[in-house]
Length: 483
Image (cartoon, rainbow, N blue to C red; front, top):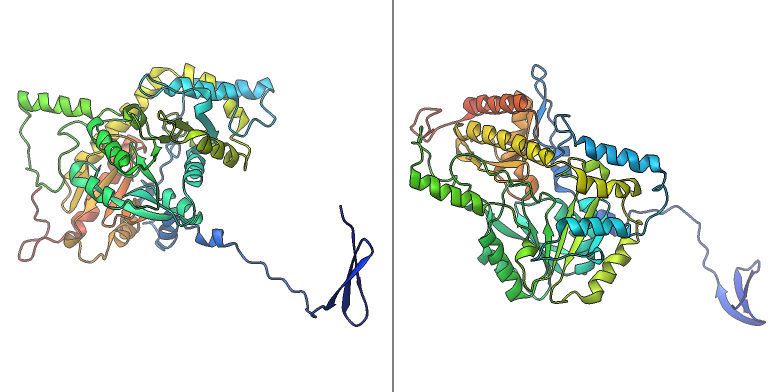
């Protein structure tokens, strides 16, 4: 290695000596050192729509009514949905063993990757350990997939309404976001024509979130096949956000595809035998199915984790499942994911140590009880808000959310959903997220994980709020509607 000697004289001349040679660089410009520390461009481009909107809502709740928050997608907040004892015991044993205190491979322990592969493998979409990358939660899984598939200047296709993190991560990476529409009148199915019209030579991937946050929808098998057909025609890989996989609830009553835009009679007649047969077909069709199980050629990176199904979002255990039957990704994408995973050296080793016990020993009753609770709350909330003048809830079928349309023409004192939800906090101490957070104004999202009594109380307060502010059509009496 070459050595250098730098000398200066009183006149400001600088000489650099290399192995006996002298290079005259002239007079150094005089400068007074000063601090000039600035945030990076990446940090400036990082933007969370939910935080921006919620932080700007300068409103105090009604001091005479305890706050009921229906805004946070964390099932642990109220303490009514604990994880199973088998899950916590598994972590205790992993900790007590002393075997998981060191670093693991950045992609996770091989044995843990095999456990996840075995859990999700099926004949239609087989998986091996090498097809699994363990991550620090599903959020990091999504970030790694975006980072491996898209370069700055390319674009991704994102659902609207949709989880705000997609946009947050993409913009920070210099990736353009194009929103494709979901259709509330079709239980939030994708507008496939609109989706396909957005694809261009710079499109890097399509994000499909099923079951959906914020919509609470579950795509049918036939609709997933149509999505795959678009991706296949356009040669676009899919990022499948399936963190709510196997959390289909399907509410009671009419099928999820009932259009909320259609007026409902005050007292609907009981379904006939023929209608009940049709409903059973709809409900069977609504069962959750991973999109990779239907794909014959479209490469898919599926993101999931423990957070929602096992009710432990704080444990930060996620994964990427690589489905690539035609070897379209080849080694390049797999190697890229491995390199990207090395930036933080993988997820928590203690949880990895418990993973096999969690996935194999959690009793079926735990999953059943969780879904039964969510279904009960969804039925309660949908029925209660369907009877409120000026509101049009969309029947949920999965995950733990319900979207409610606001007929803004009947609430003229509010300019938009943000003002509506602000005033709801102020008067009734009920906090629902305005759907502007999800790029879908004039709706709000309800989280269904609160205790049943609080859900009923929250719906009652929302009804009272709407009754105070609802205005009928011009020339009609206030509070006159078809419900």
